[in-house]
Length: 64
Image (cartoon, rainbow, N blue to C red; front, top):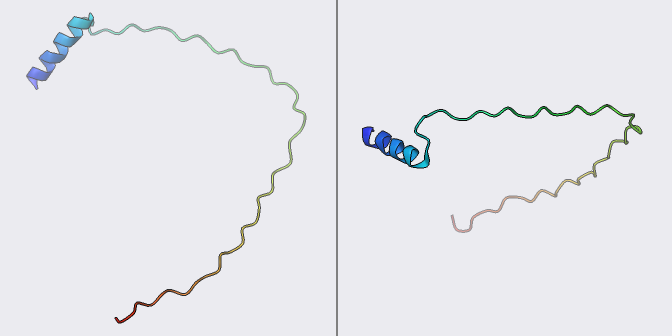
């Protein structure tokens, strides 16, 4: 485990990340959209009815 940690430290030093501290940037705030008038709700879509598949009897094994 110590060898792994030393390898990680060497890799970080090679990349210039030796301090261990990450840079933190503030995210820009999102602008809220004003609620506009809606034209009206669209009617609910009807789903197509599925016909039941015909049941087939189970096959019997031969000679058993």
